[in-house]
Image 1: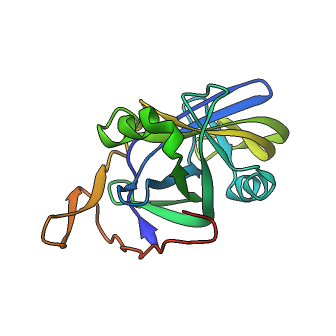
Image 2: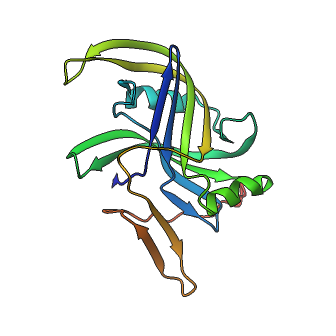
Amino acid sequence: MVMSINKAHWSTNQNTVRLSMPIGKVDRERRMVSGFATLDNIDKQGDIVTTEASLKAFEKFRGNLREMHQPISVGKVLSFHPDEYFDKESGKSYKGIYVNAYISKGAQDAWEKVLDGTYTGFSIGGNIVNASFEPGDDKNDRRVIKEYDLMELSLVDSPANQLANIFSIQKSADGTTIIKGMAADTNIENVYYCKTDNI
């Protein structure tokens, strides 16, 4: 499935990495948010985090969802999978990890901030385990992050990138689905209630 994304922001500092990605979908009834947590594009400092590194990191991740990188859990990651984003303007595809997360009923403040648009994206935080410098297309060396320990996934207020395709999905009063924004080639996925997990 190829999806559109909103804005993103990367930062790295020696052995730490932080990446913010936009929320792509909000399900009000199930208190779920979805979007890319990572992509393998070049960050503002010239670094690349590989999709393979992100997939391994998410496989070991506990799954707690935070807000604004604070040590307070507001929910949990329900699922994640590799996915792809195609930027029509540049003609380039990027691979990354797409997540579906649940926001706890005990975190009503965080949920309200998602609904009113204050929190617009996801941000990962972690420790770099393995990276190397490799030549880029522009002949500048890039630090390629090949392994990292994922320490947190947070809801954030201000991801920023030139790839700005914001969209939301909601149900209208008559039951029809409304898609707003610049999304193209968007697949709508049915999500079912799980009585066992109460989500």
